[in-house]
Image (cartoon, rainbow, N blue to C red; front, side, top):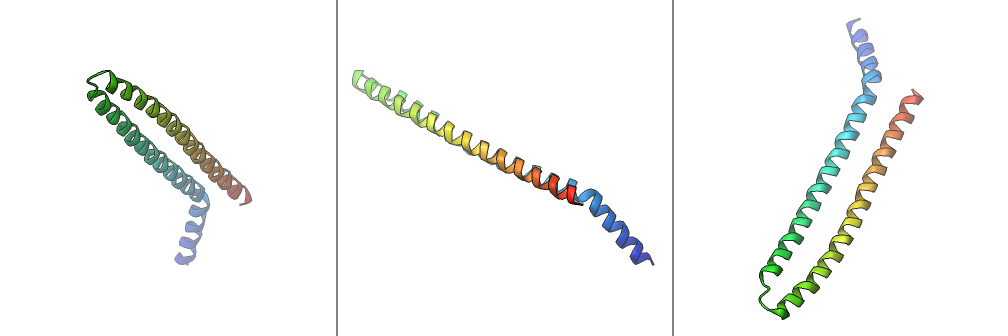
Length: 111
């Protein structure tokens, strides 16, 4: 008797809270992925900035200034490419999250 009652309660709880738990898992995964992306980007941009500081610190004459200027152009190209790649990664994460939410909504509407 009590077994059936607990089983019924458990089934009802799962139906009621199952979608919420799945949504929370989806949000947690998305937040984790986005945080890791931001940390990687911050590390890469910090490395770029530090390398620029090192190049600037080595400027002593006109020739080293010219070399530094060309290095800055290369760095700007690298930063532009990195920003494009980071934007694509964020867009992919957003698409994955959207698809996950849509799947959860479709699944909950079936029930």
